[in-house]
Figure (tube, rainbow, N blue to C red):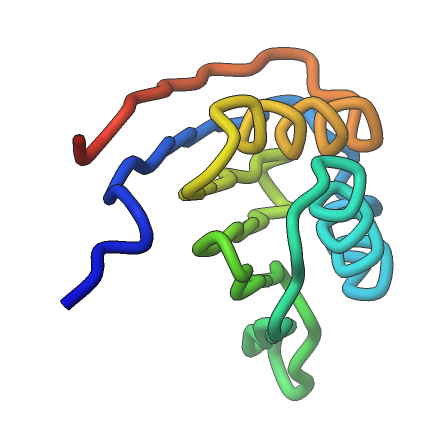
Length: 126
């Protein structure tokens, strides 16, 4: 079998603190930010799925937090939000250009304007 690709992957995980609750609970905005970040990084979206979580608040339920996952030609990118804590995490794993995950993170960071960011980055495979 001909080997077309080397299993080299770049994995970036980041946590954003001090983000506006309103931004983190806006499903359409989170989708727009993540898909635009992917495009800006020169990566290729295959499929997008998101879910606006519901919590029970007395007699009513309300939306609180979003899970959004993008399947990429190059692997995946995801964002998870906890609006009530001003917190979100992102997880990006790509093949191809080493700069892809960081470009996605930078775009998201620019739009969400966190007060503090923690991140890890590692190369995987060979």
